Image (cartoon, rainbow, N blue to C red):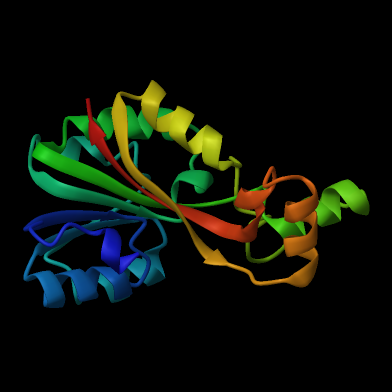
Length: 197
């Protein structure tokens, strides 16, 4: 996700920052002031050591603690799928962006080849400890529903790109037979950059 963060960003908010690994990279490589939001206390303790400011708690509940029109970039790395109402969060975050600011997000792709095969061919929809069917995911997205989510919450999608793709002979055959109808199933996630309209 590093290449999607604007190089000129000087004030960044990392939502669901975990232990602060990505936030630390942004501080060191961009020289940015980096804030984080983290709900898990143990992860937050680690993140607090590398962030300029850590806000602990549920993202919606801590929203009033964030300054208005302040951040050049707000990051959601594999976070929106864990939120019951991601549309509400994205709408509220618009006011936290400075003029010209962007939201950068990575979001798992429920149309990923292995998930699709398990569901369509074997009739299995099983939650797992990790991955796209993580037990903590409350929302599921495809490329088109990601675009729709951002559009409906007042953002223009500047970039959306599949990441963490697979190279697999079965995938290539199915995609060729269907004339590219399943091209997006190659990617585990989509990375996107969106700007408020």
